[in-house]
Length: 357
Image 1 (cartoon, rainbow, N blue to C red):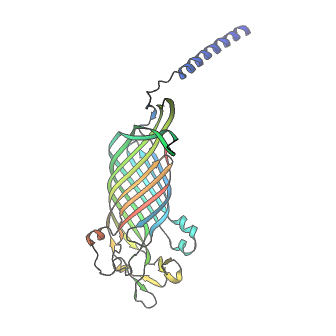
Image 2: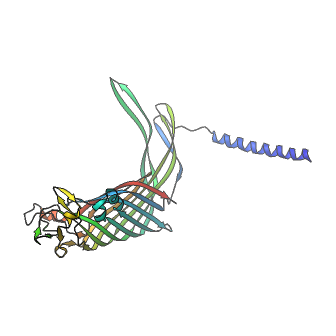
């Protein structure tokens, strides 16, 4: 019985050894190298529906075109999820609380920059489309005529990416700031000297809350690729594994909002510097009834990922306090253009991004 069991074990061991040998032989199959000066890209995988979940987070700064201070500085977290490979839902939370807490004092007490946003997108077109990708294969330096040169060889090839085009709508609750740039403030808001109750002419930082709705066009593109590049460069064979991982979501929208201006001033300029101190701020009062507001606007919003890096960008004109673009009633050259741009803003954010599922 023992001899029989030993024989069976030897047979099984021989079969396993033969299979492993065949597998190793297949793995060592001779590579077909391309001609000198050319390359070939073999696809390992190219996902059809990559990154249903996309999370982008980091630091953000928002500034207005006609303002003497940023509209807000803080941290952001943005997430997007594709339900059943169809409907996309998004949410963003932006807050300046951590930044204000680091500064401390009256800044932390008087600074409330935040944006809460929810979005839904219903795609009307889904497709796969080629996207150009470039990866460095080989680089070296050489000297000639007493000078040093650098030579680089790269592979440029198309990769298929999943894209969504659809109609989008969002709702936001915003609290941001406007610091009047002009001395009078006659076109945005006015403040009074609390001692004499007379109108004061000085730059002030005023916060306001806006409930905002949007509607427009949304585009989303996701890419997840892995391949192997085989190249023959100057007579030498080069092999490299290449990857491409990216997400880009952007929306073009019209905006409509209702605004409530804060009852208190957040800061005033003293000796050409912003002061949040109560002794300076409480000296003045804002005339909320005189504050001019804007109900409509537009924006272009982007959230993207490349590798592990994340970025967000916005530009447009937000509803809110109408931004002052001139002193009193002085003439402004090309006022038709300047007035149209008065509420324009720009936002930059950079951090890290995660794509999953």
